Length: 111
Length: 115
Image 1 (tube, chains in turn orange, cyan):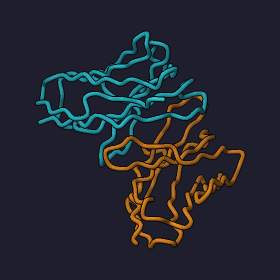
Image 2 (spheres, one colour):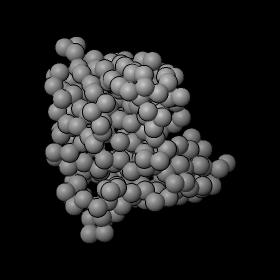
Image 3 (spheres, helix red, strand yellow):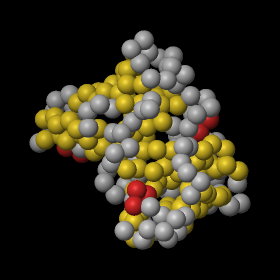
């Protein structure tokens, strides 16, 4: 039973446009959410996070939105750059559980 | 500060064999977690060690085991390898561990292929 779901395995976006990556979760106990970015042959690197007490967190070109009632979060990248091409993982955490990851979305930013 | 290192980077084994993977965390980090990444299942948590004690365990069979040494280095062992164990095995280190909401830093992974 997948507690964190990324329903789009892949996404293609033109350079300069907005990339929106979506993530849904089922466990209402999750109270902290993270996005990781992974390039081939490297481990995931932390990108941005959001606590459940917030509905938005911004860091430069990256913004994460959280809709707790819908159990949905999204990562917005504006403007998208070719270097953003990678696999993005959504992950969720509560106080007593390990990180639970989605299966990832492969983003391709086309120049 | 040196990052998380994992050895070996690539490994080929045959069914029935066993394998040991190694992870050296960032200096000062006491928590090491292990994950299995496969195309179909994404990243799945195996276990976490903190100060030489297993603190969390994922839903994997007993063939998967681990340990942590006093210098925080960790090893993961898989016995009686199956074809389905072919995956990228990632380790991550953090200062205080999974329950403290602090950032985990991932190593590059060990790519295990079971033939």
